[in-house]
Image 1 (spheres, helix red, strand yellow):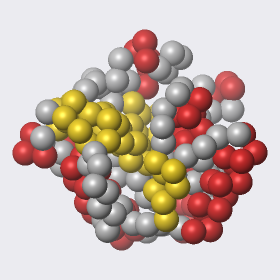
Image 2 (cartoon, rainbow, N blue to C red):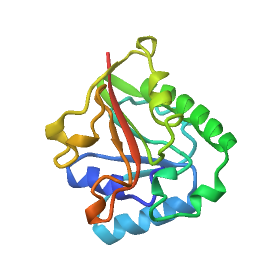
Image 3 (cartoon, rainbow, N blue to C red):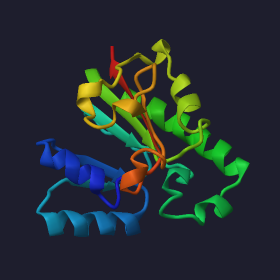
Image 4 (cartoon, helix red, strand yellow):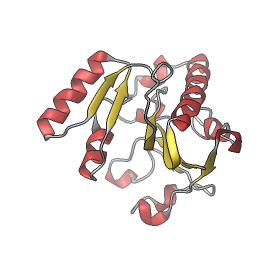
Length: 184
């Protein structure tokens, strides 16, 4: 999910050279508009990760994976009525596939960050458990100092799990699960 471009713009602001891949031409149009509005430049590719086979490998890949978006419940309450257990299982399977493909596109020593805006452990924690050393990836725990103000959201295994209850006095946060690995 490269569009609408919030994460892309944040990466650009940190000096990264970004290649943004999304399967939806309509969503990529929104990404292009947001990049133009903010003066950002990125390589934009319309395509499906499962079919995309670049010749080059990357220093880092942020897989903002397609998901049920249950973590956006506080802003989009209708999401609870639009999702079924079958949706969760289907998305989790797609995320596992995309994680394997994203990991294969890393240079040695490269970083893979997996993120979903889902509250469902089947889409976050369970998918992350499917990553093993046979994929050539090693866990790279997120450190407290990397996420100021979110130390309470770091899990014992070094992932980040936010919920709408976090920072409730300030309106809350979306629910996210974020995990990082490094290519061996």
